[in-house]
Image (cartoon, rainbow, N blue to C red):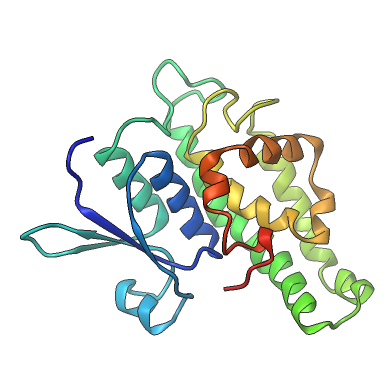
Length: 227
């Protein structure tokens, strides 16, 4: 591999967007350091204009460091600097996508619609209940009933964009898989994971066999970690 700048990812392994990026970095064979911090911490505020996660620090010898934030921008940087192995859809690999940009559409939907549907409306309430020991399971389920119904709709619509088996785009692993996986891995770690369909469970199983998924599991909800 040609010489690359040094890279540092700012973000806790618990962060789904941070994990999407570390999955890509590992898959591409890009070495990196990780500063584990939570959103809106002093560290996060230092590197991201709004204190969000992740930020990729690109350390260039003899030049100023570049701080690149927003996960899709980081993913595109990774693709540009290390094109292979590819996580994009090439012209002969459209499969379900009419044009390769449909893959980025899926990525965007995973973030803009999936993060609130999975994490904000459901998972964070379940995790807090587990940590606090209250409310009861029945009370919690009642309080997040509307969120679960919205989540079911999100999952059904995303499944409708996926191939019938294999990865999101069948045999081709792409950024679409790496952006959706951390969200559904979190969901699967909670009782609300019971709403996952056979297709989604099969996809999670396929993803779970990847070495990069196993390598980025420490520090995530799936192994019982907290931020």
